[in-house]
Amino acid sequence: MADGGAVRRVEADGSTARWAPGSQILWRYRENAGEHVHICRPVTVVRDDDELLAVWLAPGTECVKPVLTDGTPVHGEPLESRYTKPRTVQHGRWFGTGVLKLARPGDPWSVWLFWEPGWRFKNWYVNLEAPLARWKGGVDSEDHFLDISVHPDRTWRWLDEDEFAMAQRAGLMDAQLAARVREAGWSAVDAVRAWGAPFSDGWQHWRPDPSWPVPALPDDWDRTPAHVSS
Image (tube, rainbow, N blue to C red; front, side, top):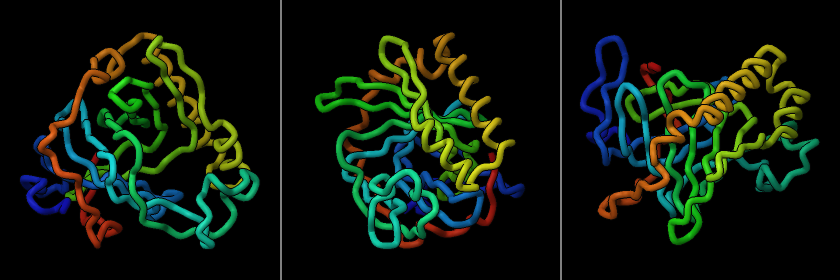
């Protein structure tokens, strides 16, 4: 799926050529700066250039998500043990409305747009994460637990501060990384306060091409890329 014509070529230095609109790629998250992929979402490329990668996560897309080894959803486990119990991965579907994901090269966050049924815009969601690493089949990152919700009236608030604190106590994030993540969060807040890109770019009015098929999850969704680039 993701390698079947989605990318024009991979340059000799390992950098990935731009994807054309309508290409299907994988948006993945690795666990604890390791090689293990624990979140994988097939998406459709909306725009890809030097300023922005925009992708559409369609309703009904088959995805991979982490669960506890007994099958308990991660967020169904009490916070105190959520990051200490053994985990595995599980296939599921992205239900509800779709999500538009926006990422600028090198930014330690991506911005997601959510809608209510009937395309009533709900909010922007700033997902603090490692800058995306591009590879032939898509992009990889590492989630940094802390998030920000931005509302249509331009107000904002921190999300998941309890999870951010617990991840530190569980040893998933040292003090230096936690400080960098918080600093990245304040940089995102500065963009919100200034109402800069991508909040001011009108993406809430965007709609997906109805001819786009829902991307399939490939069997080798967790493959290790030969090369990655920012």
